[in-house]
Length: 337
Image 1 (cartoon, rainbow, N blue to C red):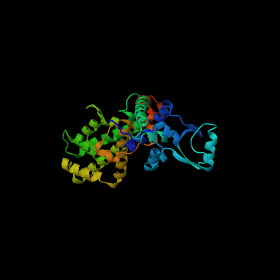
Image 2 (image 1 turned 30 degrees about the horizontal axis):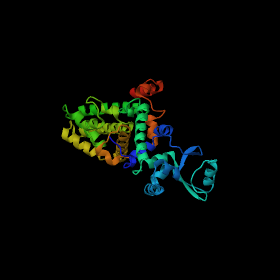
Image 3 (image 1 turned 120 degrees about the vertical axis):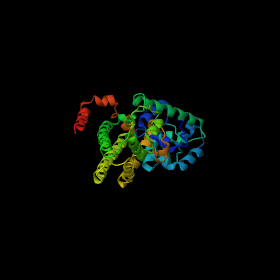
Image 4 (image 1 turned 60 degrees about the vertical axis):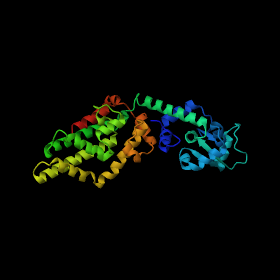
């Protein structure tokens, strides 16, 4: 989907938190700047020239988006720091005023940030377009060409997937033993779990992620979501057993669904569901360009740690993980439990 960086703080921050994309951008955009304390920085005058806007325009955004720009590297130099900055220029001609006692400087990240905000600048518009291309290229390269199964690059995915599979067997066994099942029972209760956690049934979820009909949804879920599903499955299995034994018979479909409604309202799940919804909605929009409309209120910018988790050196394809003897040993221990 088309991204309007000028309007979406989440989309802006997702780019600025992606250090792999920023490394490529700094290498290829050639924006200039000066080196100070090992980092490329820009004065306000340089930013004005770069984006071909007035100083008052830059000032306007420094006021209206002060917190965002500060978080992303805009800072004021005073006293010793300002003196060191002036000395570091070593003859470089920078228009900051010889009597300046306070000087605002932009990190490379902050320069990109304000470029994603400026609606009055054609150079800024072109920069936004190039940035989005760089992000797509970096994402595809580091994710092995596609992002549909980017969740599997997380080093926690395999363990979570195997654990969930074990709890799912307990869940389906409990349905067989303690509920009057029909051919729709398993799908019905699976969808109840999905809807409880992320407000979508299996069909809706596949449509959002554009998955093939026969794709196993669990292969696309993040480890935190799999862990929560496993908790539901284990807990529901226990509740079904307890209720059936108390009545001395199998539960009807209606009784089982009533038990589930009571189970899912337990306060224990509230923070876990909030975390799962936030991670799923935010990551899918960032990494998969997939919007879960029913979870739109939970969307946040993806933290820098998640880019390392799914795109960094520790992230590996499923094939690479399965060829690792240590990983295989862990999986074997889990399977033998």
